[in-house]
Length: 216
Image 1: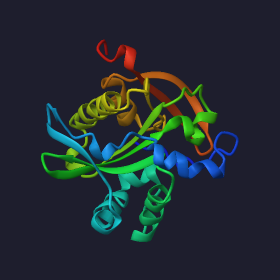
Image 2 (image 1 turned 135 degrees about the vertical axis):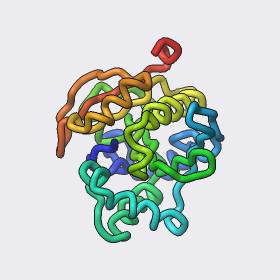
Image 3 (image 1 turned 30 degrees about the vertical axis):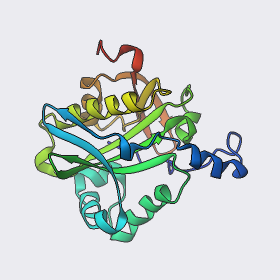
């Protein structure tokens, strides 16, 4: 469910100078996802746990080599391929946080929570300050195709809106060809705002708005 766009940690020089990066890191660009806590969903108790390479690399590498995942994440291969992708975020300024999605104590999904307004994506839509983006993959084939994506997308969007008061919108940009992903977003309160052309794909721009969260 994550489009393989340019790394989300890329700096936008016309917005953020190198001298400001330490200050931005101290400001905590995503309001500490590690502290968001658990939420109860129809599928069980869910929480986002910030990823640690030493603990989680083997599991995530296995997921990335699943053909259904590799088709849209483009990170199949040895562990160093996944590790390099993770380090880009973990060693960045905090604008993108990779997390495991843990359901009833079991890691079963991978998430990237990121500042969409500071991401290259913002060049392709009318971004607003503190727009927060999500990328998602469901790790095990047995967990796909039974509505978990919809349940967890709604839960994570609610976590973002509950814990990031400055954020008015949660956004995503799945590949338009990824029909199950687009359907899950639509079923979890997101709307299709536009189709946009990114450097390596045609994407569905999905938006869930704080103002409409109780209506959709």
